[in-house]
Amino acid sequence: MVTFTRRRLAAVALVATTALLGATACGGGDDEAAADGPVTLTVDVFGQFGYEELYKEYMASHPNVKIVERGTGSNLDEYSPKLTQWLAAGKGAGDIVAIEEGLLVEYKANPQNFVNLLDHGAADLKGNFLDWKWNQGLTADGKQLIGLGTDVGGMAMCYRKDLFAKAGLPTDREAVSKLWPTWTDYIKVGEQFKAKNTGASFLDAATNTFNTILLQTAGNTTGYSYYDTGNNLVVDSNPAVKQAYDTTMDIIDSGLSGKYGSWSEEWVSAFKQSKFATIACPAWMTGVIEGNAGPGAKGKWDIAQVPGNGGNWGGSFLAVPKQGRHQAEAIELAKFLTSAKGQIGAFKAKGPLPSSPQALADPAIVDSTNAYFSAAPVGKIFAEGAKSLKPVYMGPKNQAVRTEVENAVRTVELGKRSPEQGWTDAVENAKKAAAK
Image 1 (tube, rainbow, N blue to C red):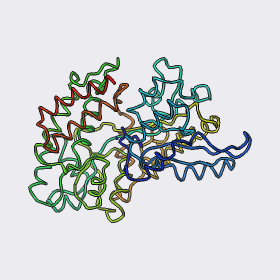
Image 2: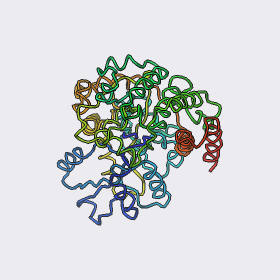
Image 3: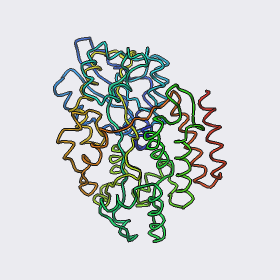
Image 4: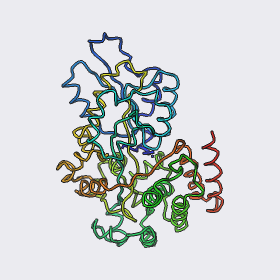
């Protein structure tokens, strides 16, 4: 998911971040039990992976295992530096750690930090994952599998039916989808919405929309975003980046953004206070929206097609650090959580879309609806697209570069820079981040 920024920017930064950051001295199964005695497995995650019920099921069938999850709800920007520190120090990481797809290449540069899952029967599981998802978890030489895939992002557009009705716009999801076949059309609809003075902005934040457009455009053209497949920084030469930037500037210039910094306290409050009408919506975002908007907004949200059709934002992996004291047990738990059954369970709990073709074809996914989102057929909306996703390659400093580019978008959104100045800042600061 969890992806999330599943980057997957993953989920709400405010929820239990201290549970992750305050536990740097532990992890890796700190119990002093004998090898054949009770074992505590620590699982480090960010955002909402939807594993709570799966943990209970696993512990019920493995009475010698206790599972502790750290970092639930934490922001990827806070989670990732800690994980990097733990791996470098050789202690502190969980027995299982979640790695977001945008950071995977960076961690694969040091494969010695992780158990090679191919040495523990993982090769037999290849058919349980979409081909490209499986390949993402492999080192460049194909000799080591760093992690097993959890979810893929998929893309849609979540919207507030009540705010659309207030603006005199259609509310039926099929009718809404027809409003915006392109991002230009999306802007036109936004201008109509803005003219009705509903008291809400059309979208939450320009950065979320920018990332959606970039990954969609890159998937349909070059196949990469900030780095090409040779790991060369191409932020200023890949036309997909500039195209996404220019479209986002059009959105900002039209005054459609609420300017709520993604994952901030202000952003969370904006959900609760019905301050915006649309948000770019990968599958895992449905859980974020429900958690932030609360039970009072049930039935007010719905899901339509994303402008431009398709795309992918987010997706993660579970890896087993070599520093862990209970590697064999951790590997078995990681296999369970990433199995088709595990991915279906996570989807039911928090919405992250499976990367398993078996799970994607299962009636539990295909026929699933989401009551919170007006009984939207989330299985149909997300699952079919997932099978034809065009993955986007992300290079070694993808996260750091992305942060700088989105910071530049944010300065324009807040009126601190012109679009031209913002682009100059984006390119210059991205190059500095890549050089560190």
